[in-house]
Image 1 (cartoon, one colour):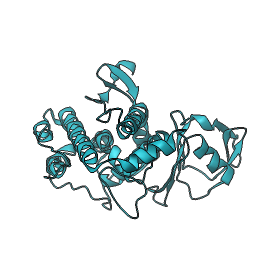
Image 2 (cartoon, one colour):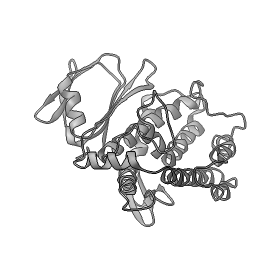
Image 3 (cartoon, helix red, strand yellow):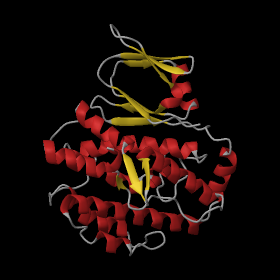
Length: 306
């Protein structure tokens, strides 16, 4: 079974991680020991350079369906560790994934792109009151997106998200791109965890491919959820400025996106729950039990539970 919804970041001080009776034990000098049930951990983020761990602790995290993110000296994620044996039907589902046809992949990619563009439209509506024509653009996506409508939408989307006509999405830029990088990395880990929990292999993508990228399926499936991170980063930038750094409060807000309750078609779930449902439905597509991925429509904040 995959973990529950706790996300733990180790960034403020040195720590030693261990395993004891099914719990992750966090020990710090001159501080009380903390123990968290492994089954409760969805994502563990290691951002302090003086965090050490036992292999038993890592194995425990993986056994219970958690994921681990390792950060560099700038607190930016540089590596992800995901479980590979958390679904009893993994062999059958992976085989079906491998044998899936090219037309199926093209159909699914078109669905993913449409869902992403519609989510981008919702971000712009919330921030500017208008969708910049993105909903109409989404209707132009065809099987496999041969016209690269995704890129056309991005050209309209990015300058309007931050109210900056000069903004470009560049991973190495020292501005709000750093916040996007961090938020996307946490989202990617959550999606990768869900993919593995669904019995799918993360290196077998729908659209993304790469000889050096073992998580291409997570990169595919996370696309419609990226705008949730974009919206939070835009909120942070509006409040604190484009040059704000990855401070603990900012990271807490970005991590918190995964815990937010979202409503779709009258059903309220956390973002982590929606991600898990999407991954499970993809496995059913590969098994021939359904035609499309179960992405939530109209995905947005559920303020009724605030």
